[in-house]
Amino acid sequence: MRIVARPVLILVGPPGAGKSTVGAAVAGQLGVPFRDTDQDIEATAGKPISDIFVDDGEAHFRGLERRAVARALREHVGVLSLGGGAVLDGDTRELLSGRLVVYLSVGLADAAKRVGLARNRPVLALNPRAQLHELLEIRRPVYESVATVTVTTDKRSVDDVVAEVMSHVG
Image (cartoon, rainbow, N blue to C red; front, side, top):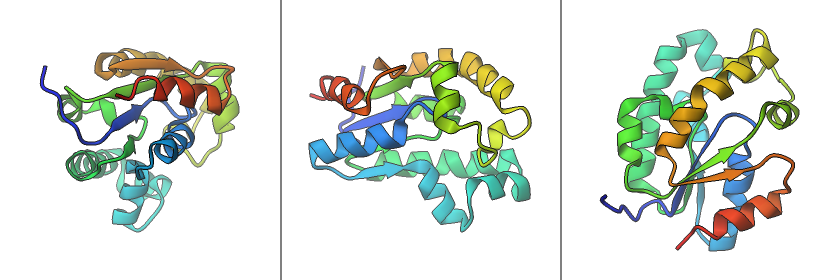
């Protein structure tokens, strides 16, 4: 297996897993920058992801996402958080090979509490609880396939999750 040094680590997982919160905290402890590819996409498109889904469709969004992830993996040297669906793309999964990828796992109850089943998450727009459940079940094997490490976040404080993630950083 080839080892790629950049970024320091990559966080993957479904909505509500804590990628942004944990990622920012881990980056702070390591003294490196934090980057979220969802924010990159919004900056590039000039509008929120929910608007991209409505205005341009999911296929357009996934293309933006694929390019944003590839660019971040080339450029970023800190902690990188990928959008929940980024790992569905085969090219993205290939780019993750040989890197420290931490899958933040979360169950339905905790994920539902954390996202609040808000309608500002386009993949959860119609029936949020049912869609979140389906999303967790369908994506779990994909997250596991790209992960170097799995960290469960259910019923744990951010500090506990951060400490466990930090224990895996060389």
